[in-house]
Image (tube, rainbow, N blue to C red; front, side, top):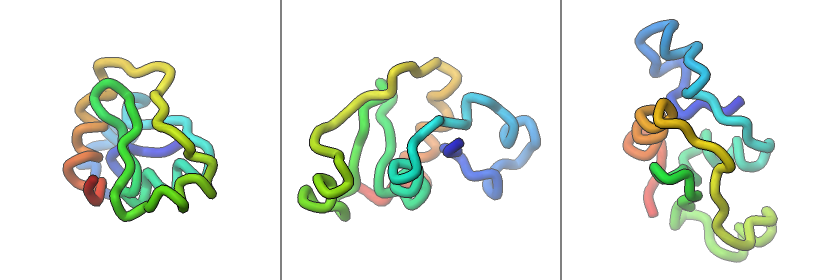
Length: 90
């Protein structure tokens, strides 16, 4: 699982073990997410860093934007944290 807020940044075990801090992403998306090169909007849409050019995205099979299939309100604080503290910009 990918964690929007890394365990090392969580102040409590409750946050570390909160199922809404986790996302099931395939390996290449997990790597981008962990490095802050990709994040998700509050609506679950992908947002890619401008540090990944279009050609690199195509090589990774990311031809177009996509959306998480399911997002709960409880995910939102963790995703917001990721956008503010991990994501390296648009």
